[in-house]
Length: 172
Image (cartoon, rainbow, N blue to C red; front, side):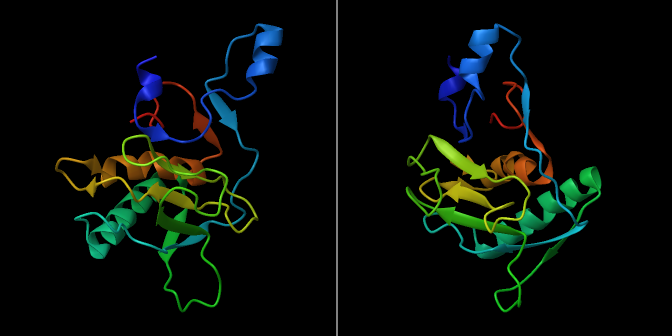
Protein backbone atom coordinates (compact mmCIF):
# COMPACT_ATOMS: atom_id res chain seq x y z
CA UNK A 1 0.00 0.00 0.00
CA UNK A 2 2.89 2.38 0.59
CA UNK A 3 3.67 2.37 -3.13
CA UNK A 4 0.12 3.51 -3.90
CA UNK A 5 0.76 6.72 -1.98
CA UNK A 6 4.05 7.62 -3.64
CA UNK A 7 4.06 10.54 -6.12
CA UNK A 8 3.61 9.16 -9.62
CA UNK A 9 1.84 9.32 -12.96
CA UNK A 10 -1.93 9.83 -12.74
CA UNK A 11 -2.94 6.93 -14.99
CA UNK A 12 -5.21 4.36 -13.28
CA UNK A 13 -3.51 1.74 -11.11
CA UNK A 14 -5.72 -1.09 -12.33
CA UNK A 15 -7.12 -1.42 -15.83
CA UNK A 16 -10.30 -3.48 -16.17
CA UNK A 17 -10.44 -4.47 -12.49
CA UNK A 18 -13.99 -5.89 -12.64
CA UNK A 19 -13.08 -8.22 -15.49
CA UNK A 20 -9.94 -9.39 -13.69
CA UNK A 21 -11.88 -10.24 -10.54
CA UNK A 22 -14.60 -12.02 -12.53
CA UNK A 23 -12.13 -14.22 -14.40
CA UNK A 24 -9.67 -14.56 -11.47
CA UNK A 25 -6.72 -14.41 -13.80
CA UNK A 26 -3.29 -12.97 -13.36
CA UNK A 27 -3.11 -9.21 -13.59
CA UNK A 28 -1.37 -7.80 -16.65
CA UNK A 29 1.72 -5.80 -15.88
CA UNK A 30 1.11 -3.38 -18.74
CA UNK A 31 -1.74 -2.03 -20.84
CA UNK A 32 -1.48 -1.85 -24.61
CA UNK A 33 -2.80 1.39 -26.03
CA UNK A 34 -3.25 0.08 -29.55
CA UNK A 35 -1.92 3.31 -31.01
CA UNK A 36 1.44 4.15 -32.52
CA UNK A 37 2.99 7.11 -34.28
CA UNK A 38 2.49 6.92 -38.03
CA UNK A 39 5.69 8.85 -38.68
CA UNK A 40 9.28 8.62 -37.51
CA UNK A 41 10.00 12.34 -36.94
CA UNK A 42 7.91 13.98 -34.23
CA UNK A 43 7.70 17.67 -33.41
CA UNK A 44 7.46 19.06 -29.89
CA UNK A 45 7.06 22.35 -28.05
CA UNK A 46 6.97 23.50 -24.44
CA UNK A 47 3.71 25.44 -24.30
CA UNK A 48 4.04 26.63 -20.70
CA UNK A 49 6.86 26.59 -18.18
CA UNK A 50 6.85 26.10 -14.38
CA UNK A 51 5.74 29.25 -12.58
CA UNK A 52 6.81 28.49 -8.99
CA UNK A 53 10.12 26.85 -9.67
CA UNK A 54 13.79 27.72 -9.87
CA UNK A 55 14.01 25.88 -13.21
CA UNK A 56 14.64 28.31 -16.03
CA UNK A 57 12.90 27.97 -19.38
CA UNK A 58 16.26 27.14 -20.93
CA UNK A 59 16.87 24.35 -18.38
CA UNK A 60 13.43 22.83 -19.07
CA UNK A 61 14.11 22.88 -22.81
CA UNK A 62 17.61 21.43 -22.33
CA UNK A 63 16.25 18.58 -20.19
CA UNK A 64 13.54 17.95 -22.81
CA UNK A 65 16.17 17.77 -25.56
CA UNK A 66 18.20 15.30 -23.50
CA UNK A 67 15.22 13.08 -22.60
CA UNK A 68 13.91 13.02 -26.17
CA UNK A 69 17.37 12.23 -27.54
CA UNK A 70 17.52 9.26 -25.15
CA UNK A 71 14.06 8.10 -26.21
CA UNK A 72 15.06 8.54 -29.85
CA UNK A 73 17.97 6.14 -29.45
CA UNK A 74 15.67 3.56 -27.84
CA UNK A 75 12.68 3.99 -30.14
CA UNK A 76 14.16 4.92 -33.50
CA UNK A 77 12.11 8.14 -33.48
CA UNK A 78 13.56 11.57 -34.23
CA UNK A 79 12.42 14.73 -32.44
CA UNK A 80 12.38 18.31 -33.65
CA UNK A 81 11.50 21.27 -31.47
CA UNK A 82 9.18 23.78 -33.14
CA UNK A 83 8.41 27.34 -32.12
CA UNK A 84 5.07 29.05 -31.59
CA UNK A 85 5.25 30.46 -35.12
CA UNK A 86 5.15 26.96 -36.63
CA UNK A 87 2.24 26.64 -39.11
CA UNK A 88 1.20 23.27 -37.65
CA UNK A 89 0.60 22.07 -34.12
CA UNK A 90 3.43 19.95 -32.67
CA UNK A 91 2.92 16.24 -32.10
CA UNK A 92 3.92 16.55 -28.44
CA UNK A 93 3.01 19.59 -26.33
CA UNK A 94 4.56 19.97 -22.89
CA UNK A 95 2.51 21.93 -20.36
CA UNK A 96 2.93 22.86 -16.72
CA UNK A 97 -0.61 23.20 -15.38
CA UNK A 98 -2.59 23.30 -12.14
CA UNK A 99 -5.76 21.52 -10.99
CA UNK A 100 -8.35 21.32 -13.80
CA UNK A 101 -6.61 22.17 -17.04
CA UNK A 102 -8.79 21.18 -20.01
CA UNK A 103 -8.37 17.41 -19.86
CA UNK A 104 -9.98 14.72 -17.73
CA UNK A 105 -7.06 14.41 -15.32
CA UNK A 106 -6.91 17.32 -12.86
CA UNK A 107 -3.80 17.73 -10.77
CA UNK A 108 -4.07 17.45 -7.00
CA UNK A 109 -1.51 19.95 -5.77
CA UNK A 110 1.94 19.41 -4.39
CA UNK A 111 3.11 15.89 -3.53
CA UNK A 112 0.53 13.72 -5.28
CA UNK A 113 0.17 13.31 -9.00
CA UNK A 114 3.30 14.66 -10.67
CA UNK A 115 2.49 14.30 -14.35
CA UNK A 116 0.41 12.51 -16.94
CA UNK A 117 0.71 11.91 -20.66
CA UNK A 118 -1.40 10.73 -23.55
CA UNK A 119 -0.80 7.87 -25.97
CA UNK A 120 0.13 8.46 -29.63
CA UNK A 121 -2.75 9.03 -31.99
CA UNK A 122 -4.58 11.46 -34.22
CA UNK A 123 -6.32 13.54 -31.53
CA UNK A 124 -5.06 17.02 -30.68
CA UNK A 125 -4.08 15.87 -27.17
CA UNK A 126 -2.31 12.68 -28.36
CA UNK A 127 1.31 12.61 -27.21
CA UNK A 128 0.93 15.61 -24.93
CA UNK A 129 2.59 15.52 -21.51
CA UNK A 130 1.42 17.62 -18.55
CA UNK A 131 3.32 18.35 -15.34
CA UNK A 132 1.74 19.61 -12.10
CA UNK A 133 2.80 23.24 -11.78
CA UNK A 134 2.16 23.19 -8.03
CA UNK A 135 5.18 20.93 -7.56
CA UNK A 136 8.47 22.62 -6.70
CA UNK A 137 10.38 21.46 -9.78
CA UNK A 138 14.15 21.33 -9.36
CA UNK A 139 17.25 19.96 -10.96
CA UNK A 140 19.47 18.05 -8.53
CA UNK A 141 18.24 19.65 -5.30
CA UNK A 142 15.38 19.41 -2.80
CA UNK A 143 11.94 19.30 -4.31
CA UNK A 144 10.67 17.28 -7.24
CA UNK A 145 13.50 16.63 -9.69
CA UNK A 146 12.15 17.39 -13.16
CA UNK A 147 14.72 15.19 -14.90
CA UNK A 148 13.64 12.12 -12.89
CA UNK A 149 9.94 12.64 -13.67
CA UNK A 150 10.45 13.61 -17.31
CA UNK A 151 11.70 10.29 -18.67
CA UNK A 152 8.94 8.07 -17.24
CA UNK A 153 6.34 10.67 -18.24
CA UNK A 154 7.54 10.52 -21.83
CA UNK A 155 7.24 6.72 -21.83
CA UNK A 156 3.52 7.04 -22.61
CA UNK A 157 3.82 9.00 -25.85
CA UNK A 158 6.97 7.09 -26.88
CA UNK A 159 5.76 3.55 -26.35
CA UNK A 160 2.44 1.83 -26.79
CA UNK A 161 2.19 0.58 -23.22
CA UNK A 162 2.31 1.70 -19.62
CA UNK A 163 3.72 -0.74 -17.11
CA UNK A 164 1.72 -1.35 -13.96
CA UNK A 165 4.69 -2.99 -12.22
CA UNK A 166 5.84 -1.10 -9.12
CA UNK A 167 9.45 -1.25 -10.30
CA UNK A 168 8.64 0.35 -13.66
CA UNK A 169 9.55 3.90 -14.60
CA UNK A 170 5.90 4.92 -14.04
CA UNK A 171 6.55 4.76 -10.28
CA UNK A 172 9.03 7.33 -9.00
